[in-house]
Amino acid sequence: MPINDKDLMQGIKDLYGVLNVKSFGAKGDGVTDDTAAFIAARNEVVRLIGTFSSENGLRRGNITLYIPSGTYLIKMGKALMDDSFAGTAMGFSVIGAGRMITRIVFDPPDTNQYLFYNRDNWNQIHVSDIEFQSKKVTNNFFYSYSSGRSHGMEFERCHFGGKWGYGFHLEGTNTNSEILWYKCGFSGEWNKAFYIPASASDQFVNYDFISCQFEVSKGDFIDAQKGGSINVIGGSLLYYPGATEGGTFFKLGVGGGDHNYGAMRFSCIGARIELVKSTSKLVQCEWKSGIVTFMNIDTGTQSYQSDKNWIHASFSSNGDSFPNIVFDNCVLQGRHEYKYTFTSFQRSENITYRNCSILQHNSPEQFINLVNASGFNDGGVPQISFEKCNGLSNTTQSKYVFDTELNWSRTTTGKTTKRVVSINTANNALPYNAYPTEDVYIPLGAIITKVSIYMSPGTVTSNIPGWNFKLQTSEVIPTVLASADPVNGDTRKGFNTQQDQFFICDSDAKRHLVLVASSGVNQIKKGYCLVEYIG
Image 1: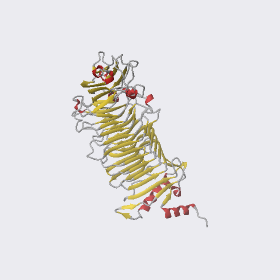
Image 2: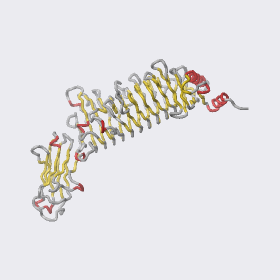
Image 3: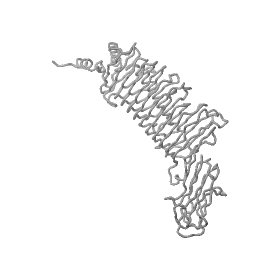
Image 4: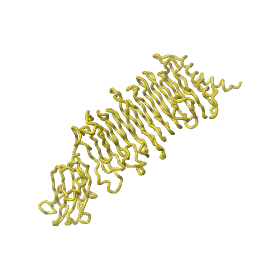
């Protein structure tokens, strides 16, 4: 006896706990209004969950809603999840046939509608392999209010395109935590893809975006107005090249006030990022503590067509202090801004740029934009460390030394370390009369504490008169920081000049150091010119 479609669908539901939206009358032809079918399927999910076992007050979900290939038109909010369920359910899956295979078009006539609406009823939600499209920016995708029960959600291989207001809007007094996005794409026009308003709890934590693409014409990607523990791993973030409005990829604590020791931890690792307009920003952060880490990100692909003075990252102490901030092994364009007040020395900053390429500037003070929001008393200026960084990628960039503790001498209780730079030609050779100079730019404001010029005895095999090396500044009348003659006047005995200094490099001419060989130096020989500085 043949089995009809209705019996087959009922058998699958009974055997596997799977509901097929087409068994409720959905057509998926892109023309028919399938709203009623989705609401009927949603109501059946709610009915069935009421029959399942309960653990600690939570009903076991045990239900999967399957949406086959096709395009489904939905014209009413809450069609996939609403707040009609009186209890709390644990476990519910909505699964399509694949991204760009199963498509839901959300087009309600009313504004401010949500396709999924969860008010502390559902946790352990799984949505995968579906494309969601919206027709206007007043539509929203997912709302969740939690007072401690809604958490544990996964969105995998989904795409969100068209025009949207909020993608994921979280509110409540506790949890709404443990949410994963894996290989999800965001395109089109947005207000905010992920949004936690200032009215929400500090205890919303653990959000992971893995291999996601946020490639849009406008809108903010992540706006967490309070705290949160957020990871962005891999993926691509950009605003369309022709976009005029742009937005900010990451807003942390903007307008959120104090966080009452809630979690404040953000990391972005291995992402490709394009910043094509002055209105495109990587991050705006107003956290007063916590951790902000960018590692192995590349923001420089559009530097060839962008203004070097655009502010692409902004951090504000809000009159208190900054979080720990690290940019590690990154390619960065534009400028980074730090806003502070005279009270911003509440605690010592830990702000570090390590192994970074600063594409459009040749010194840290050009790259960093400092704003004293109080307008007086500079003691709260942040100290910013640059370690093994470099600037403009051109033939002379190796002469610009980035390693510095920027603002160490301006801030209250500044800390710094000694650094050493070597001035020589290839293979540690000193200059000679055919190419008599080698130069370097050490950081502005650095203090030179010692100069060493050395050549081993026996390097020159005969006593040649007239050999001398000078390290001097590039001032109109150069300051000679060290002058090196052979030991006992005999070039065979080499050079060993150790000159202590306390020389402040407070101008470009003073920080531009030149090692000069006298006209008598007629051979290329291995030697060392080492400049020790703090700052």
